[in-house]
Image (cartoon, rainbow, N blue to C red; front, top):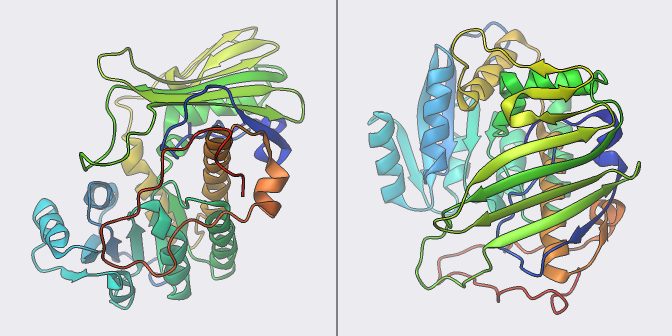
Length: 363
């Protein structure tokens, strides 16, 4: 889930993760509830897009829908046909288009105020660092890295962005969704009492892969997080056709239970979120919040927050792959795992063996 956590379930109090199923999956997007080019007053926001697969054009459309005065002026992707497809989807035939591994540099060198980073997440640390170095505001999709080394890089860049007063917003839509925000305010306010447990579910019916010859990774993943106060959170996902779906989050306290996805609390202080009219699309609102922060001169910066969320996911993946318990301190300071190629180039692709707990080394 992408909603905030109460203070006594903070990631900074995180103790350990452990795999609780024999199966592990190639899914790294698992997370838990978290225990200026255009200066102030500027109306026009010129946006570049790096990554024109499925998510890039969708995020660009969300950005265009979010605020007046926004224009997509440059696009980049490894493949030129992806750039042309995105131009058609967004109806921007005159936008600049670049392709190749260095295409992101050409977008950043264009006359843009903000960039949307939506490539596969292994590229995110490098692209994010380049964007902030170029003085651009950033919207970046989650996750923001694939290993602890990448996460640390994102944290460092996010802190630099804060120094440079550049806005950074991540594609963690729940953090911008009214029902989650209001529900979490009640939890933060103590309406659930002391937090003792939680459950996160992303149990779907489809498997995300492109090529029929990809390695057949197991289709389920379950991880238990233990926090310093003894609270435990279970996070699970699976993608099994013709099965019951559950995409939800639940927080348990000494005074009640919250179904965060429904915006409700049951217990001593019940609460039910009531939308004022039609609930706004959080995928659009996250861009509205970003643009407003740029124009107001009070830039949002979610970079470190989403990096810690990503690290939680990576820790869960590492625990499941190795069958080992992992401490948060070791993840943040000790792990040397660095799996993304330093000089990516055209080729057949890299397909790692299916991970087997007990055989995969902890790095």
